Structures are given as C-alpha cells and as structure tokens.
Length: 256
Image 1 (cartoon, helix red, strand yellow):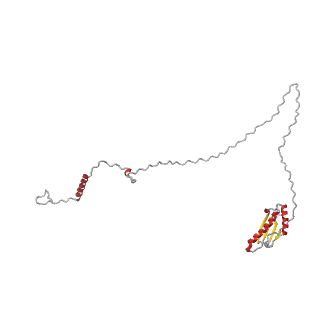
Image 2: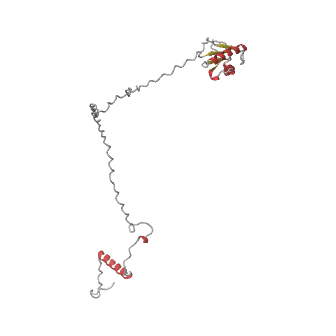
Image 3: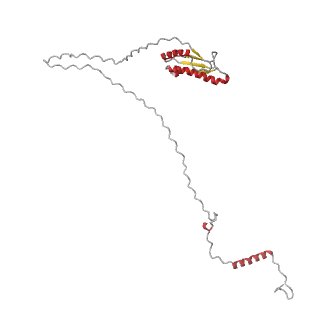
C-alpha cells in the first residue's frame, strides 16, 4: 500500500473504490488505445466486389436484373364480313309488238300513148305450202312363228334299284330317251330328280351319298343325249322315302 501525498505523516491513506461504470469506461479506453497503436492506417478504400471476385454462385452483390420483355400487342380479332345481301332480280318486260299497217297496193304507172297493153302473166298461181305434219308409218306386223303342237303331259317316272346298285335298269333307258326327246323339242322344259336310298341311323350319311350317285347317273345319261346339266335339278333325299319304296328315283317335269 502506497501512501497518499495528501495524507498526514505516519498514517496510511484510505483506498478509493471506483464505481463499476468508471471501470468499464476505463477498460474500453485502454483497449481502443492499444488497437489504434497496432493497426496500420488504411491506405485506400477497398475496391467494389464484382461478379468475377465471387465465381462460386449468384449473390446479392453480383445479381443483375433481367430485362423486362416488351408488352405484346393484343388487339381484338377483326369482325367477320357481313353476309351478302340478297337482291331480287329486276323483272324485265317484253317490248311492245310493232304495229304493221297494210295499205293499198300501189297503182301501176300509166302507159305512154301508143304502147301495147301488157299481157296478163301466164305464170301459174303459187301452190299452197305443203303440210309439215309427218306421220310415222308403222312397221308391218311380224309374222308369228307357227307354234309347236302341244305334247301330252308326261307322268312322273319312278326307277327302282336293288340294294346298293347305282346303275340304271334297262327298262328305264327307254323312258329316259323319251324324256330327252321331249326336252330337246322344248328348250324351256326343266327336270327334277328326287333320289332315295335305304339305311339305318348309323348309315344315314352313306344312304345320302348312294342316293346322290343314282341321281348323277340319270343326269349323265341325259347329258349324252344333249341335255344341259343346268336344266336338271337333283335332290339327294337319302333315307327320307316319304312313304314310297326306300330305294327309288323319281323323275318329274317342273314346267311341262
């Protein structure tokens, strides 16, 4: 403890306690003096930072405002053209017919004295105009060809077969020749052949094939006599005997 200069000799001087505010102000002053003595004075102002000084990304310092695009010119679409106005055509009136007046024929000039009289004309009077109405002459009637004498109606022919036979019996050959002659005399005649064959429910298919073979044999026999196959209608009925003989063949004209 040091003595105070103002203290009496032989007595220690009492210590003075500074307030806290003064201590804080004193420490701040000492810190400011020490920092000012060690830091060199600034030579010049720091250059402004540019975008090249911070290549890492976009910051507030190097951000540039984007240009504002021009405002588009928005105009209302043009109005559609007005529809054409219908104008009624003007009716034209026919001009009036000219008035033709027929006056008296001019008088013949007077003949000089001593001239012979003009003889009357010997030209015949003009003939009246011919009638322009034309009458078409009808062609002469075509003579009708003499019609063929009507042939008696031929009854349906039935041919019986034995078992599974497909060949035509001899008595049927003569009947088929007569049918072919009738069809040759009248090209409009058409023929229908209905053929039947016996069998069981298990052989129904074979029975139909057998009846078809018999009908084809008849049509082939007529074809050798000159009858076209399109004029012969074939019906292979199979086991549908319809109350008659199970193995038979019926031949009948459709339009005699």
